[in-house]
Length: 113
Image (tube, rainbow, N blue to C red; front, side):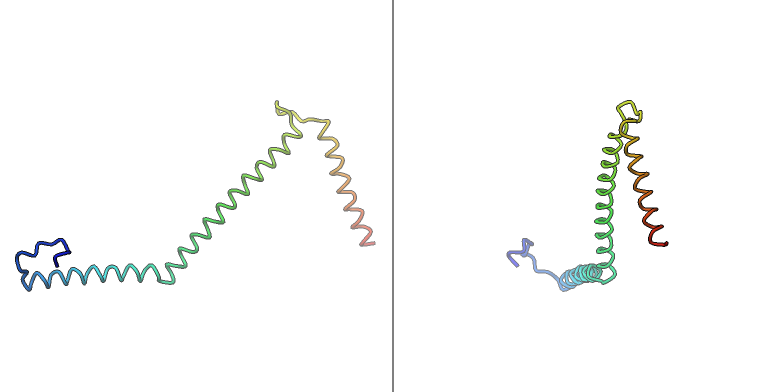
């Protein structure tokens, strides 16, 4: 055991060797228990579930930021810097909206009747 870094000048007793073996056995058992827990199907499923949840939350956050930015851009088109509506833009947009609703209602009536 010259390469192990332990002092080998004094011979070890049987009880010391048995104690070393018992310690090694305990460390090995703990390592095997940890490995068994890591590869247990419930552990793997929980880790996978956590990764999927984190990915979904990240994508939802990005979608929220994108939608919020889009709403702000649209709002900027219809509201001036002081927060007042721009009638020259709101009225035409409202008229287009009413026209679309009337076209849809008219098309539904034609299909029914």
